[in-house]
Length: 184
Length: 388
Image 1 (spheres, each protein chain N blue to C red):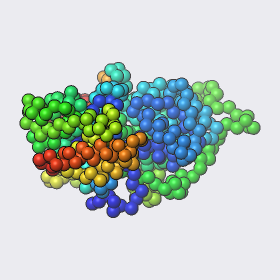
Image 2: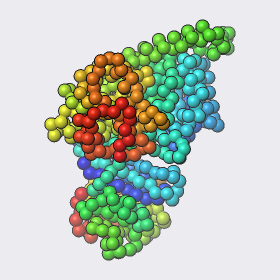
Image 3: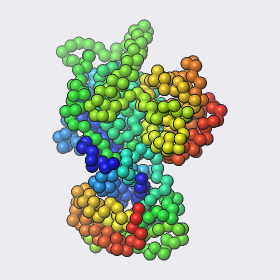
Image 4: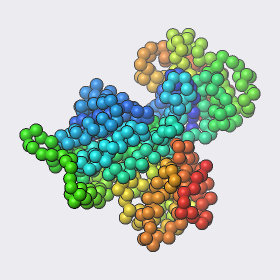
């Protein structure tokens, strides 16, 4: 079983991103379970989406304690509280303009910064970054594939379908080339 | 195993959306609902289905949950099939009318999303909201998965309309309510075959003069409780029958309890709701290591299926009851209930009552395995124990 965590702030689309990623794995024939937890039920407070993927039905219903991959929508949320769910094998993708070396102080983690705001803006997505971050995340994970995730984004996007897909694909292309260890 | 190889109508649905699909397929006439986190996606999905022309109930949105249940009672008295949904504070605001609905022998089906009751404020999976309504006369079912929640809604209408008692189905906030996973949505024709139209034994009719809920003298009030007691006594068999018939149609049978890998078990873990899934995982892992451990899932909590519980625990050396609730001053409610069911039967099971998931804290498979190791040889305490 692979376990994935997505952390964002209410309104950024972390819960939607978790659902879209789970759907992409589901379309590839995998069993999935995803759930979101939030404390404030309002914009701006942290929202965590948990995703489990397996080739067998998933029975367990508890929080993910050690993730294989993590996506963080905002580098201000990337702290020890979130990283306690990670170890040195966990892939951590974070939306940030800062270089990877800036995160070295957090510990021995595989942190991949992605400037999601720039890619989203370049693709006419304004501040909506979840399709961009999903493209980069899928590239770094090596699963479930760019076609699976972009198809799901296209069919679910309430508006700007072409721009969402373009942002996702640009981020995927950029990070599939640079990902050193694209394995989950 | 690839689920694409499965030819069922699998859709990715959250637990709450699965509930809404179950409600749609059951074709209620009236659905009064007030939104509340984390139940709101049920109401959102129902209104979306209504807009699409797929849900034809009259959806009412009164000003409070108290008024919601008042509307449910009136509609049920008029002979309508009635569905509603709530959570925590909303359920507690309904409290007065919960008693009324069962005493008046309505056949309302309610879905409650288990959430911590204030204070302090919270949105976490904890079953105290519904367990504290255990004396209101409602049938109570607890669901482990989105699939079970959908299936239980349909079965609940069959049960409610057979015994003329209201049925409350519960699932845990987030771990089930917001868990999105593959759910088989049955064909309408299959549900129609299982659930015939509601024919109430009596209903309000402007053409026929009759009185509902009039004051009674003590002897007849007493009699009303005896009649209610007889109705409660018939529930367990109806849950068995509905679960068996549903299983014959869908391949997914259900019952008042479920014994998972309990054969020759030295330790049986007893629990309800979402934690059953994590216990299954823990049981599988311990069985792989040669440990004889099983799960006893309590699906029907009211009326408590005491005969089935006594039989299931008859020769079990050790039981761990895991409670995701805390009754202040007493402990875990499931622990109390199971102890009471076994008292006086000569049962010698060493039973530990562990307050494991109170306030919605996560209880992992590893944690459950450690608890089994920690408690299996301990002298049991009759009182509940807080565990981290």
